[in-house]
Image (cartoon, rainbow, N blue to C red; front, side, top):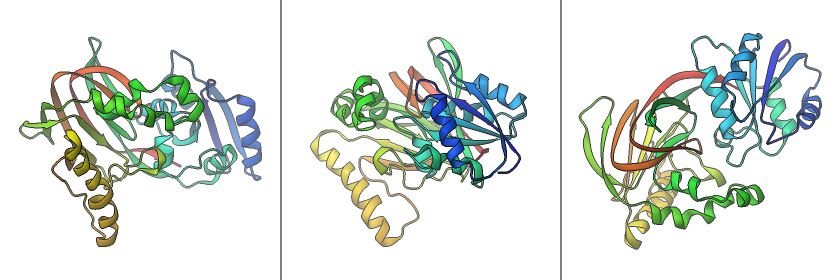
Length: 313
């Protein structure tokens, strides 16, 4: 928008600054904007430079990179002292938040036009607290967090293959991820209630519902509703996975569209729920992931929603 001070936090491993500058010029359309550039590093995925951009007076902070860059910038902009809006130039493999917010993919100029002319909306963020490698950590996520198949897919996916074929590389790792995801008894507490013992191999806690390839895993998820959506998977064997497949494709897919249902349906091997906070204790260490990033193994973690955390174009 005219008069905006725009700070671009960009990941040099994803794109050249010259390409971003060219796309920005193509998208400019006569709008007047003051632009500054802030480069991420291996040591700083975007939190610190986003803070520097805020200190410089930025009205809009643009995360130009993959899911990790977007998550890092969002984490900083969700702090109480931050008043700038967030925008995204998606340059990663998953681009999960961009997909869920319908930010143009694969076209830098179109994405920059959203930065310059788009209206901002408010979205929530989820926050994970866990002890990782001996230290307590608190990390934000914009899309999903959890353990199980999704986390194992991240660990098992070949980085070289991901660089060649993008998100399809995750499909190649699916079989190994399923094999590595055994059903365990876990303790889960929702919204401060009593802990319950449940069985499952995968637990996803989502702020958004769509994954790569347009697959909607959490059909109720709305990034602006002040709630998190939970999905517990417990399928074992062919019959169990057929039940899970039927739940996704029929119960919460075709039949949901025909009946215009407003709530996801649970099944024998899929349990849907909603909450503002959740605490989980595991009988053994499991890999925890947030927005496609492997955080390491944990025995317990808690997640809560920060409602209306960000203004995003």
